[in-house]
Image 1 (cartoon, rainbow, N blue to C red):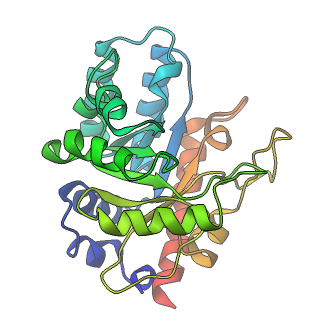
Image 2: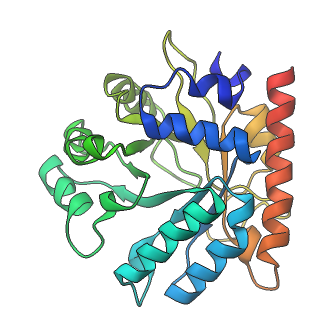
Length: 262
């Protein structure tokens, strides 16, 4: 089972160069922490990325919520990614037909494929959405996560939807490298998907708006997932982002070491 292997061992088996580099980065940096940077100003996003950069493997953005977006923001974020050794994941959650997502991914104001190492998509439209994104992303050495589950209460992404999503991922392994999911699924021969889990918190269990938080150890050790995604627990009101990021980095990494040593 891939969950019992180290990130470095798993990196040697990946054909997608970005997934390979990402697993190597996690091992090198001793971090499986992604910060969900849902901020609405350019200055705040850059400031947060610089503060948490030393502790994260991945910065997760929602670039379309930034009020004063410009391409200097992209330049600064990619420079910080290089400076602090992390990757960028634009949490776009594509959900349209293949031709439309090709344009959304490659063109428009944001030109996501030009700067985001990783992006993600719902599978509601069927496999055409993967084909469309793949045509753009594969030549650029990008990779895709599929939304197999979500962390919000009442989500419809479960059951047969999740099973079909996993089968689609297996069909496009050169581009689809993992899932947004709440737990690791049973591997078939040749599987080694990267599992990223949102809704992780050390101090709270719910925000009263449908978000449900889980402890890093539950996510990484008990459920076998690879990357913990943390937002407000790191930069919420009154919090020191660097201090909190370090705390989450250590908690996530300790759970990973415990998992691979058992």
